[in-house]
Image (cartoon, rainbow, N blue to C red):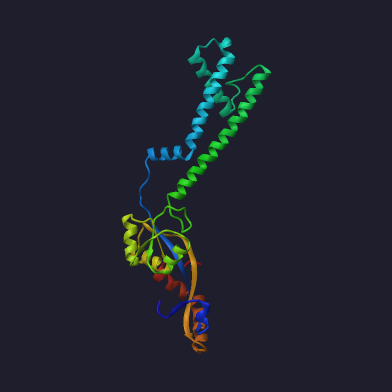
Length: 268
């Protein structure tokens, strides 16, 4: 923006600035790839994330409980090994996971104490498993999208070398691919070479306005914000008139119309 400068204290020593007339900063652009993982990759992610270990622990617990029930009731039921253990697993599952005492209703005091303990263990297991499953789904949802510059590491980011965006990423130890122009960054994003672009918010927003892309989007909001004003010589009589005009166009909606024309909807 020729003639516009961000508010910096050292500049105010030699220049006068109008009221802030533009709020800018950095923003993240990403694109929707439109692909979804297949069921095998989903299943693998659950197992590797630890949810599968809960299922394995449940299976082992039911097998052990099935054997104990068979040993305790085999004289009464006269079931063979496979039938007895299978019936015991069925009872253990009904009692521990559902709390169905109709499936397994022990008559002896010791058996009832064991049934209560098993029910408490089953309820605790279901709670832990549900929490782990919900946590895994949340992590997958977060990792499947870029929602801001603060997202988990691993996303490939591009920006223009030598810009404030590159300085920000370097300062915050975020690895990025440096390109010569913002158009190069767009090409990197659309080819899949990178997952996101970090750059000046007005430039990204104007690009979206011009291209009317339904796949590209800016996310996470503006960060490292800077306010822009009109620079004037110290003591310039134009400062008051410019400030009054800025207030007028803000109040009558002209500012919002201009912003929308070039950048889309005006964020409050």
